[in-house]
Image 1 (cartoon, rainbow, N blue to C red):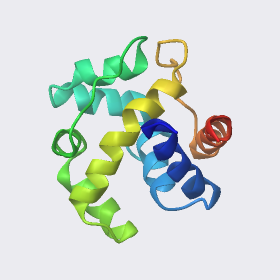
Image 2 (cartoon, one colour):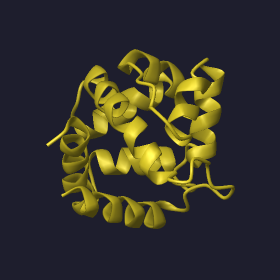
Image 3 (cartoon, rainbow, N blue to C red):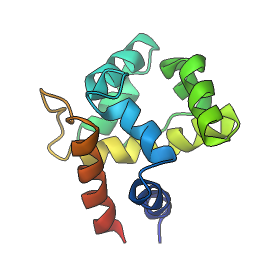
Length: 138
């Protein structure tokens, strides 16, 4: 089992429980998640000088890796600290986990190599997509 499959398996259990890191991912990627959805994520990464990384996740080809520090820079330390607190994690743990998950996850959610004009939908839509994707990796 590859690293991506292991990470996705961990996310799958969180999504099935409708909690944990699944909620953090939903808050980042869902249109109604408070962070502007996928388009908001792209904008935050562009502003942090990481537009090439997030574009590689959406586009076709190899996904550019990012560090936990880069992710915190893009999302803001307040967001990471608050989300980590809700999960009972250290902010650096959460940022490292998200840095591992987001490239592959965004890649899988944008299989045509482009971001959907209307984003990825609301939290319910996104959880359904995640559940479908995660079911395929098991």
